[in-house]
Structure formats: C-alpha cells, structure tokens
Length: 245
Length: 251
Image (spheres, one colour):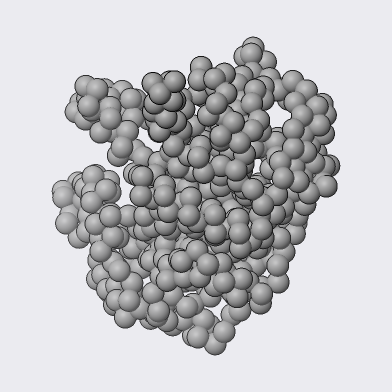
C-alpha cells in the first residue's frame, strides 16, 4: 500500500497547493520544534487526524507505511528514552510522536496533492532560484516525476526480487555489511532499469513537444481564495493555541 | 508525405558497432498504414526516431509534411506523434486528464480550451470515465489508450507506434487493428507501425523491411508473401507459410 494521490471531493483537496504546502510546512515545524511533551504532540496529531478524516483523506496507506519506519522509531525511542540515564517512557514517546507527526503531515500532503499541484507548489518554492538563473519549472518537474515514478519503481523492485530469488539469490538475512551485500542483486538491475526508464521518458516528453526553453501554458490555474486563507489561519491558530497550552 | 533523401546516420556512442544507415531514400504516403519490419537491431526504431525529429541524420534530408526534421524540431513534434512500446515509460501525468493535458501545455494551448479538447479525445478513445483516475490504477490496455489519446490530442498528421502489439493478447491485438483502421479513416492520418510480430503483416497497406540499417524491401504484404528474400530476414506469418506449402503441393 503506497502513499499516492487519490482524487476526492473535499475541502482539504480543494485548498490551493501553495497553502497546502505551507500548512504542511508549519505542521512539520510544529511537530519538530514548537510542540513539546507527549500531550501537546498527541493533541496536535489527533487534530491532524480528525481534520484529515473530515476531509475524506484515506489514512490507511500512511498508517500502513509506518511499518517501514518502525525500526527507526524503535531506535529513536530507545536513544531518547535512555538519554537521561534511566529509561524514560515519556521522552521515548515524545520522540516517536514527533517523527510520526512529521510522517503523517508529509503523507497527507502527498495524498491530497495531484502531480500538477505538486509541480505548482515546487515551482513556487523554487521561484526565488530563477533570480539566480536556475530553471525553477524544470527543477519542479524533476521532483514531480520522481514522485510519479515511485509506484512504478517499487513494483519493478518487487518483480526483480522475485526473479532474483527464483535464481537462488538470498535477499534477506545477515546484519550490517552482509545485509547490504545481499541486496546488491536487487540494487544493480533496479538502478539500470531506472536509468533506462529516465531515458525513455525524456524521449517521450521531447516527442510530445516538451522543451526546457519553450514557454508553456497551464492546464490548471490556482488562485488563493478565502477558504485557503481560512485553512492557513486555522492551522496557525491551532499551533499558537498549543504553544499557550 | 515523409521523404528520406539519401539519409545517413550512425549512433555516435556506438561507433564500434556495425549498425549504420547509409544513404537510404524512400517515401511514405499519408492515409496508409505503413509497416516497418525487421529483426532486432535492424534499425526500425531508429528510423521512427529520425522521422519524429528525436534523432537527426548525419547526412541527407528527412522531410515530414514538407518540414525538414533537422531544422524544425518544434513543428515536427506537432506533426508526428510517437507511441512507445512501454506505456509506463511515457505517461507523465498522475491522472489521465493531466497526462492528456501535458502535450497541450507544451503546445501553449490556452487553458480555457484544454478541458473541451481533453473531453473530446477521451470520448473518442472511450476513456472519458477514467479522466480523474490516477494512472497507476489503469490496466495495460487502458494505459495504451491513454498514450494514444495523449498523442492524438496534439492533432498530429503522422502517428508512429513502436511495437504496439508485442505485449497484447490476440483479442486486444484484433481490437488494436480495428482502432487503427478507424483512426486512418476518420482522422486522415498516416500511420507507421514498427513490428516484428508476423501476424501483424497482413494489416499493413505497405511494408518496409529493414536489416542492419538498410532498407531491403518495399512493397505490399502480397509482394512480401511472394518475395522469398524475406524468409531469411524475418519470420513470415504461419498462414502465409501454410498457403505456400499448399501451393507447392498443388503444383
């Protein structure tokens, strides 16, 4: 189960992409540095979850994907728990909640933003770079294509894994260097396939008239409306209320 | 009309390989389905890329609808649409409508005109109910239809299909050929199909056989059937081989 955009009709989905990005950024900052203590972090996480459910966001893929960072959460929890000598459960929980909060915020942003919206967001983010002569729109497209190809590459990895296992490759087991070595039969074909795909995609884009230097129009235009500003203010309000709390 | 006038080409990165196109000349008329056939490494796909303006000849001239492919890249991309073998490697958008819009954005079509064009082409290809669907939820056949729609929306005069039937089952293959006939008749486009599937040969109006970069045969499927020289270069359809055997028996 992957965290990908799945279109739905709701207020969260209709928010301006830049505002969506800003809200996500504020939430990440809030989870990382502003909120302190498991209670504050818990309230913030619960608020994010409630708003997501009201906005018809499918949280299952995000919860499912948490399994992939379970080891990281466990290690961080242990390190933080033992940071002051004896194991402190609340400190461990706080550290874990911070990571889960950041993970949820980023996951929800990806779930409610289409590729075009992401591209628009990245483009606006990279806009200041254009002052230094850097191609903002192209950089944004690179980011977006990386997101678009993630499910394709992951299914490719799965296919290669089965093929390599059928040929007797041991892809699991061992620790440290031996674990990394055992993944080599998977990494090399995946990397070479990704390079081939990138070449093919570049060719297909060129054939469809894409050119870095040429001006393009936009399928969608995004305006900042009252509801967008309201969403941003609500987010900031919740964060400030938590700070007071 | 596509015109190859003494065209030479060689891949710069593969100078050690024998593959090269040397002073090849031929032409393709519009409103026909042209088959480019040949074995692996025969140069079929290279010819397609030369026509689409994705590669440029070292010497000679390629003209598509009167435009020089080396000089007028942007115009050529508008005139020639190419659909590659693997749909996953050419879909740029996350949803069906976004992918169709990609070509329109590149052509700088005004935003207000886009939805109508997208709806129109989606209806033509029978994917109008998939417009909002994420592309990774589409089946293989639906992805192929999306790739065709994404190219057709740019209203090209030529369509190139790079080995479109090699991944299709016999039923889908039959539907694909029906669709090409409709496209040819309704849109008045020239179609080039690159193929090494012998069962496809009968569907072509005209065939060009390539071997090691050279054009070794030009003619109709009927002419290819009787030309024995093709036997060693490509596998002929079972049906043709059976007919030849029966004729030999009767003789």
